[in-house]
Length: 202
Image 1: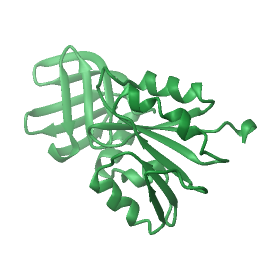
Image 2: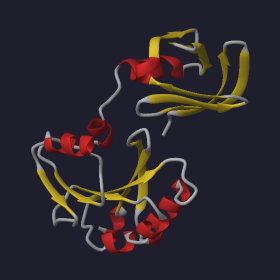
Image 3: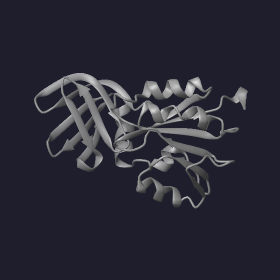
Image 4: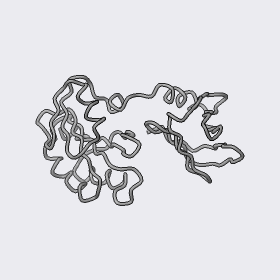
């Protein structure tokens, strides 16, 4: 986390306090007005005197975020890849449960490791579980039994859905004895939450 800040944003003649979020490939703002600014649509980005200034096709958006302006500017100009944010290394042994987009599969193949689909293979460094509903989320208890040692469970779920929320995902993981340790913007439509077995239970 740390990519979510309360701030004031100026856009055109409007100004509002609210919440700014720096996602995988976009900057969001939720206040008296809403902004959704994909990185690809940004013509220029500058950090000046604690302000993040994004020039877009629709006008200049100014985020008053103080010391974070430089950091956000750098992340927009040089975004980490999804694999880097998740923390996967070349040669990693990965298991996939559920359906994932072709781009993610291609990224995993480039690691030249071991990729197992539809089951959690023994010795996996990470297990990715796609949950698009609470019904699918109920399968986490079964997946939990296959985890050993430091194996990470990443639950990937859709953003902005009432049928399955971040709180639902966290509560489900904790009920099975897992600890939530990291959240990553998986794509423009999905979020990924990382769970691990607590050290004292391994």
